Length: 444
Ligand code: DLL
Image 1: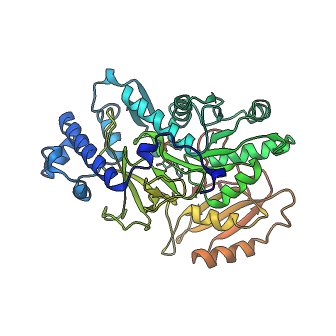
Image 2: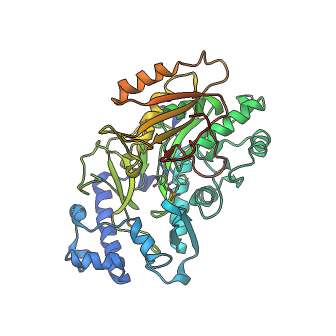
Image 3: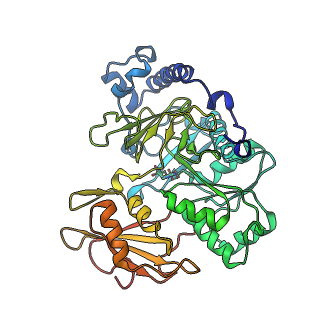
């Protein structure tokens, strides 16, 4: 680690705990979680009893793969408060995500949960180099979505100055970036690109009118190719932050400034597993699987072995930053986003990686799964890039790269800049299904 890149940890005792000590702590907390679930008497308690677990003392850390799992359906079934393990009046804050098919996933926090959440987000901000002297431009949406308020509370916890600008109104954001000179930017990666373009249009450049040093980008999948574009546009170190409402929100895992290579999972509070999505059996470290989390210390909504649907790999290895926490890879996609094209499994993020490795295309793309005929075919609609990146590639060139790297045919449509709809607020839509009627983009 070079001194230049060294930044202090927010909770060094926890973040760099020796693994055997961490395992002991996790086992003790897992037992506590099981006792709390059994005492609450809900659906998870019933499953534990069916599995022969009558008390936390019956369980060791190594038994984890044999314990029952929970999923989003449980939250939907218990909606709104059925999964809470505390009285509604002990819940201080509610959040949620819109969820698949418009069904909301509602989550709640006790006072202790809110403190924990703030600390986890403070850890992530500190890992990005933020400190009490920082100014955090927080362009995650404020509201039911956990991004805005989660990061906000973390910045306050850290003692930094936070600007709760929320998403949208891009011209005003550019003015604030210029006038306030924040060092930390937090928003979705797709919005970071949008902001980066708007900043360039306004004649601001990294080092001249902008002094951002790092950004924490998450809430949607993004690739290293996007990372390179964001860094170039905004002149900052682009770091990944991961989380989901059910587990706590942002702050489950985050990259460090030093390595920017995989996200450190706060596994002293969120025990992580990767399992085969089909069988639920653990996969070896380094292998992609579905992430499963147990919330070891949460009160309002304790979850044992919650299946996230997110596909990533876990890695246990020393990091330049000194954290001993397990690392997760960037999320490759969601199990339910995986496309099967003529028998080949493809994640949208893999298509993104191949497309954006070409310097003359823009990071604005939409994948259209044309299901009007069987077998369905995938169209990658991507904008060519304005500026000095050289001539746009021929569609055929990108198509051969995709065939070579993914082993499957993907048709490419090159579009004029500005054709793909931008998301100013909320998460970017990268995949649309076209089953009948009008195409999702004109002219397909
Ligand atoms: O997106 C929490 C969050 C806010 C994380 C801000 C990071 C920054 P939900 O709205 O409940 O919570 O959506 C959770 O978003 O299961 C993943 O599929 C996806 N997701 C979140 N972070 C990442 C990431 C917030 N860094 C769902 N990379 C998760 C890829 C992500 N996908």
